[in-house]
Length: 266
Image 1 (spheres, rainbow, N blue to C red):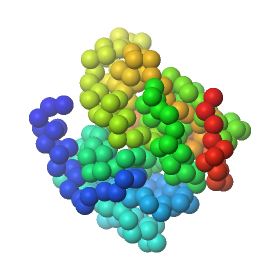
Image 2 (cartoon, rainbow, N blue to C red; image 1 turned 180 degrees about the vertical axis):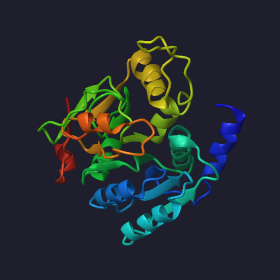
Image 3 (spheres, one colour; image 1 turned 90 degrees about the horizontal axis):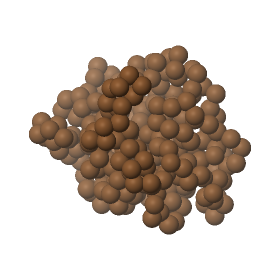
Image 4 (cartoon, helix red, strand yellow; image 1 turned 60 degrees about the vertical axis):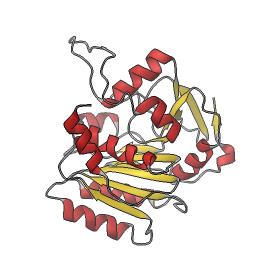
């Protein structure tokens, strides 16, 4: 990471100290999607959780703040940070994660403003915090690879697969996993993997995948029944309406809560 970006990231978060269970949001310019995301999130048991919003500045900033305050009116344990300048999804995400884990978070659920979730993701996080994770880098909320076409949602509500794929559309990780598998590789494209046109594959999600899963034979946990889906059909950084309709529209997410004792890894 270059010096200017280090300064931007260090300046991006200047809020209060965190408790040990957090949910971090990377937010930009889509208050309508954020409202849908938050309405799905508040169906979870949020007792003991603190939410941190890292917002890139835009003409929608006032609408975004209004959405947060109205939707979260019955939940006061949240902080809002507005970045001094736009960091972009890659650096804004990094800044928000590094902030929560530097301020005493033990486990974090990462979301973006265009991701809706099932009502049991905090239960899953509590379960995940207490299981063996020696060769696991995180728990994804959606099955499949980042940027791929193999997302799926099947019928087994309590099953998680140990896979060698990574999906950036919502994930749960601990402080140890952040420091071991994410933080030092986020901006590191030394993997030298190329696409079909021979161009270097960039993006923090691919950097995490290549350094950890492909090169070190590590795994993620991914649900058979989706716990998150992407709703950002327009105004996104990477996803076009055509791609969204083809890949994400068919996916359904779990709409009822499960009991943590029933979650299984296969």
